[in-house]
Length: 214
Image 1 (cartoon, one colour):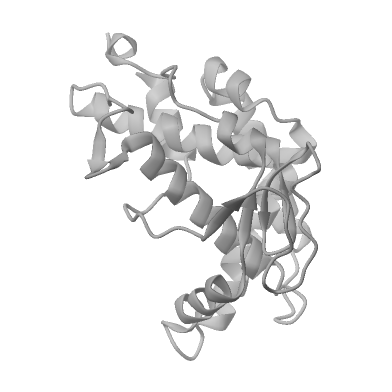
Image 2 (image 1 turned 135 degrees about the horizontal axis):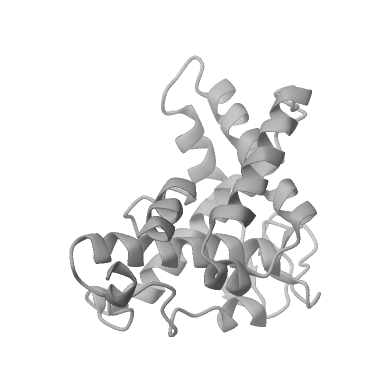
């Protein structure tokens, strides 16, 4: 059970909501007039003109998969990814929608780092490197293999998480709903496109099952 506990400790916290970014397939410009990067094979998601690489998307998607599976195991069940999360939406589709929205939000607020004078300190960078080391040393080998991300790339991903948190904190300093409202406005003004590598991400093969709890 140790590897399940580690996943729950290291996993990104995903809210149980199906409100995701607007997503269109294929190559096109965003409504904000920014260049769509989805033709680049390394780009899985183009969030308002900002290309998000496939390894980063795999990290969030498969960490989410592992988190949900670990939670269900704690309830003495295996999650059925093909079953309905809500009518007409499978658990796989629903969780991928949550992941997509989470990525879009992160990219948006990271793009505002300069505007809100957010940068990481040496201490922040040391903490990020320690967290990355923990991930590779403590996480289940199957999860690490499925994510398939280099150490330096994961450092960059974790740094973006911290930047997003700082920017949102600054935005919310005078109004607790300011960040939510800004993000909703951004979503209305931008089209998000997904490449083939996003569709290739699937949860058909479980990372954790009840057998791991024995």
